[in-house]
Length: 316
Ligand code: SN0
Image (tube, rainbow, N blue to C red; front, side, top):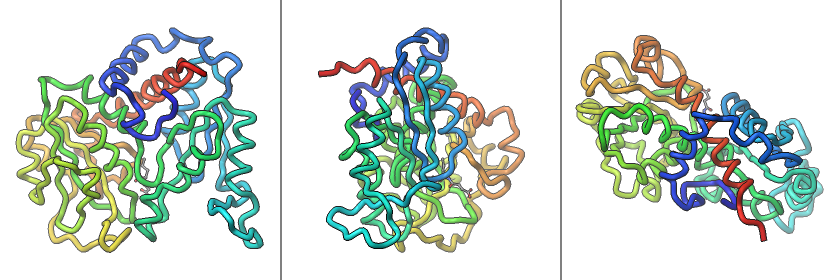
């Protein structure tokens, strides 16, 4: 693997899922693979799971790890040809070039601005790192995708499924803030490659980008979507039209025990951080059906599988 930004960077996603599950059985099988290699993790936005799991994954492979809180650093310029007489102090051309002098792999987290759809969907920060770094780049959640999360989600579904082709329902849920579409876009993109019956449910107005939905069935009836579900994956996202906004929703979309009772004793999944009693009730989150901690644990093996395949790539 030369870079990791979406499912399309992976030759065989099912094999990567199996690789992560194998790593889970023996996380210390390759303690020297990353000897004298350095992984640099650059965060423009907050992180708990991604930072800790990716650092630990890199260390399990014997890598050096450096983490940079880029929000505290020089303000970077991403536009070419700009006269830099304003607030940006360093161009991404130099910044990514310099980072490549020290790092063998660069991870980047950059959230969308949620102001302009075209700007966000161009995924400028991640694309600029790929363009100007001379080493492999790993997305730690970009403006429009969160591939390490989705890989861990698929691993978790593979681990907990009770039958072939489980029914997996991605449901919109309420939130007090405006959030990116990245986790949901990515979940669809990855699970479309998985042996599951994938269903998307959201209130009218919260349509996701058709480039990510593709032919996934969409329902505006949450109860109907939950019927017979084996996995309920809850996530809030802001609207595409008007872009980055919260819309009034007539009915309550919170995941509750009463709604979980409509399912096939489904497991509950969420990428975290989660707003208790807004996105999902305590009763569901604290029930034995909740997979949020196993899901978070699988972030480690997902990251380790990706770093391992990048470290093992043929160089030439
Ligand atoms: C981010 C998101 O993309 O939705 C990261 C998820 C992995 N979530 C948030 O920003 C939640 C922030 C909040 O205030 O609850």
